[in-house]
Every structure is written in structure tokens, then in C-alpha cells.
Length: 629
Ligand SMILES: Nc1nc2c(c(=O)[nH]1)N[C@H]1C(S)=C(S)[C@@H](COP(=O)(O)OP(=O)(O)OC[C@H]3O[C@@H](n4cnc5c(=O)[nH]c(N)nc54)[C@H](O)[C@@H]3O)O[C@H]1N2
Ligand SMILES: Nc1nc2c(c(=O)[nH]1)N[C@H]1C(S)=C(S)[C@@H](COP(=O)(O)OP(=O)(O)OC[C@H]3O[C@@H](n4cnc5c(=O)[nH]c(N)nc54)[C@H](O)[C@@H]3O)O[C@H]1N2
Ligand SMILES: [Mo]
Image (cartoon, rainbow, N blue to C red; front, side, top):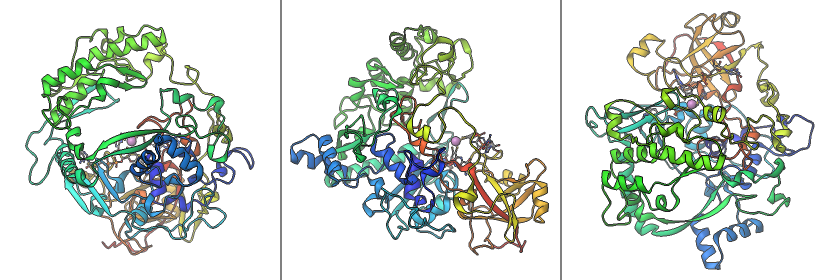
């Protein structure tokens, strides 16, 4: 699921947008956004199949598949018919309905409530039902969604269970119902790679996981086993109706000819799965077999291969090798399949199935691409055709990767990775509508924003949109400044800030950087306690007064956790406030476009961003410099 839209709906931030999507349009009234709110635009993107939406429908997708069977028609036809008749709706069209909001949330390898989540205070209020400092008021009648249902009372505390896996105390674990203590990187096997350098690294345990900690791998397998045991009776084998968005690097990318947007719900075209709406796919779920399947490589790899960016790799040879290396599952639902029951097996499988660590697959993939593009490519990986990087290789030392069609750069001959080298030097067509570098976007929604060509867009005017004071204004409550939350130079997100060395090197708690003239304007000296307040929340921090900050702009570095030296605020009397207490999600409608050439959804590749750069806040020196906790 695209997280930005997911949280925008489920933390109810959509209820606090008093402007329509049309506000952002370049021309006057009318056009594709007329009368629609951002929530309406998200709902439209989901029903046209542009972006995924989850939960998808307002009815259990297992029941939808059963209903179709009972009616003796294909599940896709059944869903189209139910939608057309108005008996079935997309869940995003009524996000506050009890059947449509999430109840159980598992957070793994993220600090959702301390780091990633923009609009922290909305999460606290609506998802958790915890104390919250949201000060904004909801959109008044007339400014509310048109298609999406508005419930008079917004739900608070939607979640029944918040489960977190982490090895630190964080702003998320403090709010969790259950925390499963995780092993750290020196207590487990894992792989690590990034596009910032050309190496694959192994994680290796220096010691076994201490006390009650377990590796994430172990935790999820244990959960899967218990789930399977219970689910065999409760759920059994069912068919699941899955709605998949129009996908990048497939024919789906041509679903919007000439960029003309047609909405089946408005009668502008017929609802055709995979063309004008999501693909509707029936999948068999054997719930009692989840754990067994998780511990093995499944049979679809034999029949479908593995596809990345439109290139399908045939992996029969690799599966045979993995059978020998990892062993073969005996008995049960995964009988005869290569095992990935242990973390090292899973690492081995990843290395075997990627062209970046398997020269045979890299050259195979490039030959497939050669046949399609007519350009010479396989030589890029030829020097490594016989090379297979194994987990043992990565344990001995970090290993440089092999050039592969999974990426666009070239490491051939020891070069350093740079994106799009293969497109530029080998004339491999770009994955755009024209196959070239492509700047003109001929799409109705992009035209509505006046952005067919790259243009400068100034920061959003938060005075006009939300009634915040104008930047530069000094009033009774303080000085209004632009509020940015760039990445921290002394931490990676919320990690590493919290060790004693870092805490004693810096101020050891929340800090906010401001320029000397701005500080002088409100009588703030370096290290004074200040309070920053806007409609989204409140934060108390020490001022770092610096000539390096431009006037009119402050920084509160991402991401300072709620549990380190956070005092009570004068504004609310409550403890709390972090950098993301002052931010919130703002979704740009054009980020929701899909099914249109390079603007087609791919997992972890395309979707709306959170736009945290557009905030303002009012800052003042605290009357009381003796803070209380
Ligand atoms: N206002 C604002 N918000 C932002 C941003 C911004 O610039 N400003 N940046 C955004 C961006 S680009 C990003 S990437 C996100 C980052 O947001 P997150 O990914 O949520 O941030 P982290 O603080 O890195 O959280 C990672 C957590 O995983 C834990 N962890 C690390 N390794 C393991 C492991 O092996 N197992 C387990 N179980 N846990 C582990 C760490 O202890 C840590 O608590 O924030 C986004 N949010
Ligand atoms: N030390 C450290 N390194 C990291 C991370 C970390 O947390 N700590 N996180 C990693 C991750 S996941 C990511 S995504 C990257 C992020 O790395 P960057 O993309 O570099 O992100 P930021 O530091 O958030 O922002 C960069 C600069 O953008 C400026 N800026 C803000 N608004 C605007 C604007 O409207 N226009 C322009 N032109 N500039 C603007 C900010 O002032 C800031 O100086 O860093 C990675 N590296
Ligand atoms: Mo990031």
C-alpha cells in the first residue's frame, strides 16, 4: 500500500484539510479537480487502478470470492457488477467506517511514531486514542469531501493492538501494547546493500541474541507457526480477491491513452479490470500452511520465473542449486521445495536469485533485453558470467556487485555505480512513454496543475491554506517562521542520537536551530528553552542560535525521539512534542497518477510523498526557563 495515502486517511488528517484539490490548480475553476477534496482524489486514484488501496473494499475479500463462486461467475465479474450496482464500495470512500479502518498494526524496522510519521499528533489521536496536541479544527461543511463519506464523529483509537519489534526504546515502543525485543545487527545473520555503494555486506552474530531477544526472522517464523496452527481451523483454505494496481513495465502502463482521464464511476467509460480499474485477481490462501510456505521457495518460481522491471529471469538452475545448498523440504505443503527455513538460507536464496550477485542471471537478463531493444548489453556482465556470490563470500568481506538489468548503472570493469549509465551509454530505451529522457507530460491532471514541463513552485502558502500567521510576522504569540525538518547530521533518523556520547556532545535533548536576527527579534539567546506552536501541535526545545541559519527559516532536525529530555510544554501542560508534532501530510494530486507510462505504480517506487517541507510555526521564548518533566 502507498503509505502516505494510507496514513492520511487512517490518521484522519483528511478531515483537517479545509481546501479542495482544485486549490492547487494553475487555471481558474473547473477541470479535473473541481469540487474534489484530496481524499476524493485518493479514492479516484484507487478506483481507476492507479495506486493500490488497502483495505480495498468495504467487504471481506474472502467473502467476495465465495459470493462469486456461489453465483457461478468469475470473481472479477462479480466485483465489477457489485461496484456498478453500488452494493460494493472501495474502503477508501468511507475511511472512518468501522469495517474499513485498521485494527492491528505491526511496526518492524521503523519508528513510525517518532520518525517516519508526518502528523504525529493526528496519529496519536485517531489511531491510538492517546493524549494529543492537535489544535487544528476540522473542515467546515462546504469544504468537506464530495465523494468520500464524512462521518459526524471521527473515530479515536482505531487500533486494538500495536505491536512493535525493536531493540531500542523509541517514541513508537512507548506507545505499543506489545514490544518484541529484537536482536541487533551483531546477534544475527542478514544481508545489507544500498545504491550508495557497490557492495553487499553480511551481518554475522558476534554473540547469540541475549536474554529474551530473538532475531526478526525467528520472531516472524514463530508468529507464522502459531498463526498457522490457529488459522487452520478458523480460516482453512479460502480464495482471496486481490485488486492489483496498473503496474510499471507491463502493458498496464498504456492504460491511459493520450493522458486523457476517464472515470468509470462518472460514466465516462466502462469499468474494465486492468484497463480502467485495478486488475482483479483470485488467489488461493491456505492459511494453515502459511508458516510452511514461508520456509520454502514456492512453485510459481518454476512456472513464472522472477521478473524485475519487465525482465523475466528463468531460475530453474538456481532452484536446483538451492536445493543442494539449503536442503529440500520433506513432507507438508512445501514438500520438495528448496528450503529457506533459516536466515542463512534466505540470504543464500536472495544472492542466488539476483543478477547483481549471480553473473549467470545478469547475462541471461541482458540477453533478454538485447532481444527486445536491439542494443548490445550482455557484455556488461560477461566478465562475471560464471560468478556466483554466496553468503560465505559476503561473510569473508564485502563483495562488489555485478552489473545487472535490475538496475540502470554499470560496475563493469570496476566502475563506480551511477544511475542510468546503461541508458545513456548503451542507448537502452528509458522506461518512459517515448523511450527517451522525457520532460513533457501530456496528462490531464498534470495539465490542471500547469506542470506539463518542469516549473518552479514556491512553498505552499500556509496562511492562505490553513489560516496560519504570515511568515515574518511577529505577534503576541511569537515570530512566524518557515519550519524545516532536514535529516540529522548527528543521527540516522532516530538512531544513534540516544547514546551517551552523542547526548553529551550535543545538547542532549530536543533542539531547534534558528538564525541570530530571528532569535534577537524574540529575545532568545543560545540554549534558551523555546516553544514552537502551530495548528498541528506543540514542541519545546532548546534554541541553537546560529549565523549559519538563513533568516526566516528554522530547522528541527529529523528525528528526535519523544523520550529523551522532553519537558512539559507551557502551551498544553503536557509532556511531549517532537519534530513531527508540527508537520502533517499534504498530498499532491499528481503524485497519485498511475497507469500512464513512467507514471505507473511499482512497489516501493512510485507514490505520493509526505511533503514535510511546507510547514510554518510560531516561535517564542518560554516564560519559564526552569522546565519540568
Ligand atoms: N518531518 C520529517 N519526517 C520524515 C523525514 C523528514 O526529513 N522530516 N524523513 C522521512 C524519511 S526520508 C525516512 S527514510 C523516514 C525514516 O523513518 P523510520 O524508518 O521510521 O526511522 P528510524 O528512526 O530509522 O527507525 C528505524 C527503527 O528500526 C529499528 N531497527 C533498526 N534495525 C533493526 C533491526 O534489525 N530489527 C528491528 N526489529 N528493528 C531495527 C531502529 O532501532 C529504529 O527504531 O522518516 C521520514 N519522515
Ligand atoms: N546523517 C544522516 N544521513 C542520512 C540520513 C540521516 O538521517 N542522517 N538519512 C538518509 C535518508 S533515508 C535520506 S532520504 C537522505 C536524505 O537526505 P537529503 O535529501 O539531503 O535530505 P534533507 O537533509 O532532509 O534535506 C536536504 C536539504 O534540503 C533543504 N530544503 C528544504 N526545503 C527545500 C526546498 O523547498 N527547496 C530546496 N532546494 N531545498 C530545500 C534543507 O534545508 C536541507 O538542507 O539522507 C540519508 N542520509
Ligand atoms: Mo529516506
